[in-house]
Length: 402
Image (tube, rainbow, N blue to C red; front, side, top):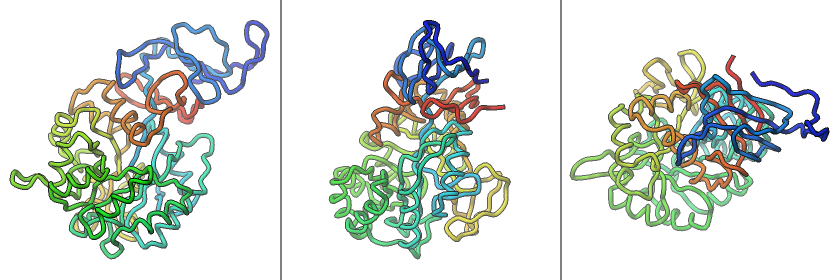
């Protein structure tokens, strides 16, 4: 329970700033180095001091004595469409706020609102909506937009509606970036489609992550795409040309090229546990980004839901269209982390890399992804079984397990 210090006077009689938090007796985990057991003092949403037995008065306290709590950088989900009955493509402020409120329950402190293949008008409505979004207290941060489709392959459509797929042009992208207030941070593209390579070459002038996905590219086309700046693979294994010993495809290229970080949906529906292990062994923790690719049914009961005008049946077997195609997931980041740990027996430092640091580095976020003085005070507090106990965004507790 968060303790509130109500006097707002420190021991020397001076004023205690209200926007301060002292977290004591927790084990801090970073992507490298040994775990550190100690205290953190947070002021104005940033980590002001890290040490042992800090003798600092604060407005708020979290005491981890006898709790065996682990403090990790907050999870960053780069690929999520929806949650709690809402979706980015709803293009409403209500939906974005509902998503941001629900995600903190699973330890997510930041995310990319992800679009999907739809008409240009509907995509633009979603972009304009994100451009207007202002985070409320108690919500995760919206870092920007991940545009997934419509510049993808009809051969590897999955749940992306083929009718709305178009060839990419830099003029179209520049317009989208402009109306989104430059919020597009990642774009999924099939480089082999008409105009794909020309688009990638022009995209170099923008600070946007080009991610290969929904692609039927050959291994040579993957190499060409990487030379043009592709450095990420959207939901590895899923809706991409698979590996064959005479045709390594997108899967082979993504696994073998160190310039590519791979998104991984560790729900054991999108990827078999042994496929997760294969990715871990070939890419290592530095090459993997845990995502959920979740749709609006996440956190709700099984049943039928909408995804871009398509009916999705959600059950214990996952989320599927009528033709059997997977339609996103209902995975939480909390469960993704647990599943990754169970399958690979990776270290906690590696969990931090895959759930936060790698995403922060890809997105060029210089103050996220690590527990370090001067960094944003975005954390997830876990018990020894990796259950989320508290989520802290910019130094404020936004979720507390009851």
